[in-house]
Length: 160
Image 1 (cartoon, rainbow, N blue to C red):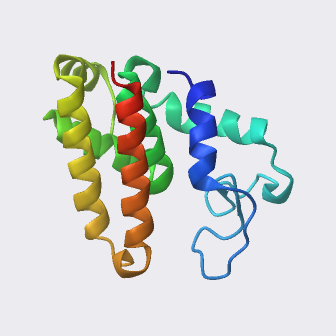
Image 2 (cartoon, helix red, strand yellow):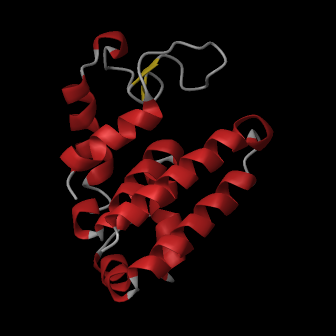
């Protein structure tokens, strides 16, 4: 899987332009928030501009192109939703290495040794536990569960 394959899926979850005063991210388009990217003209952000940000800041740091297809999109989606550091730590916890937030050779090697389905299930369990501990679980939990369910459906499609 490449970022070109993953991006359309991500856009189904992230959507278009919003400027909700109750959203801590503030002005957001395609999931790119003003809070995280203060120098980006959010309102005029193009899909190609968003994809370039996702590739540089999310896809490449988790080396998603080296993960099984069924896991790469899940890792990207969770990184976008929870932050790159959180996604890497939870993926590391799922594969049984030190969850230091840095995806390196040890993490990649451990991930490659796991059965693809086991990795998907372990990672999903880590994500769900993470979500239930967040203070806004009562308000956003349903959308996080639905997002995780969609990720599992994609994983079923992507698993050989």
